[in-house]
Image 1 (cartoon, one colour):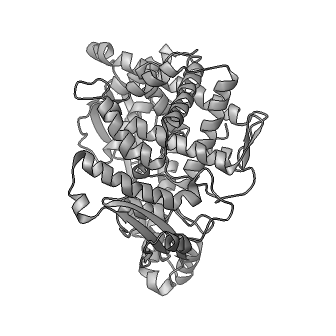
Image 2: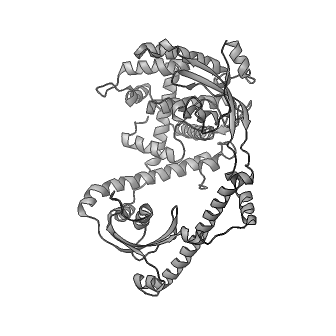
Image 3: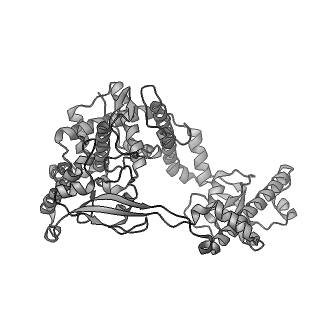
Length: 505
């Protein structure tokens, strides 16, 4: 038996899962490597087949939609992220079952009735809202009441398992106090600025310099990748598009069912090993196949969201699931890819020269700032006051009157965000590393730091304590999931753990 998570912990759960990339932003039923006929991994000692994996994707897609009220197709996602997130989710649910966690039918009903998606004008659960969702979303996707209950039961197990792990973390009062002081104590700083413009004026590249730079950075100077697509539409008629309320939902459900039927041979739980070609499937159902022009990522093909989906496709997985549009649904088929190709040097010579000068000026300026910092640090270490050390090096710092880093008041100085960030992290007497901006490097020296206003402590410190506690819980969950993924019996696809935990946890 488990209990529901408090609303605050649910918010934390969503935040934490975003950190470890379990964001529930899913669409469709595909994997980056395309369909396979054999097992693609293992969870808790059991091999995972493509149909089982597809079912898990369908589940997470539904959970996202239930939580946000946004069809997962409209949220946007990349297939690699979809692939990774679903594996992690399956592992957590399996661990919950192994730990003996359960969810009763009453808990499933309560979970659904707590969703804002189904709240009426009075804020309470509305059966009418649920019925509308069922007609517009569940029925076109053939999600039965029984299947919905199964998916929600798994979600309750997932929440409970993550909540149990999060409960093992401990807050750190000293860390909260330190962050509060950094953010809300008034601080006075001096800023030493080194503009890149000075170095840029003295740089005169040779043809050999530019040729070498072009070859080393050729990826910057390429034509964009282009793609051509076939597609079939499942649109409402002009008269249907004018409908409102339940009548329009019924019409949309009807065309959605046709789109679902079309893609069922590619993304259903009973997907055949050799599904029919796109054109053959369209002909079989009497659908018109249209062809696009060559498009780039900047082309608005239907709309930016559909363009993004088009560039998620690949030759191994060229057919999309059905995607919602303003007038119905669409299914895409990738038929041609024109790779990005390097542009001849003559066409980009001016840009190459400008980029070379910019990069060289930035590096030279960074080195100058670093050397100056070393000299200032040596003088400060010997006990020389900062302003005397600066004068001995003929530096002209900008002294910034005391300000509170967390206050929204705009600093009337260049590179204010950089200064504000450095002032928050440094203690009095400390000097920052060279901090880059678009056209300069800066050194920030903290002259003094005062005490936070008493009223700020009463108002803000408790919130920061909660944030620190949430961050600690997030770290505990991240570490636990990393360990879970590597337990004996769990075998994720090659490279997935590196993508999910790039820090090498």
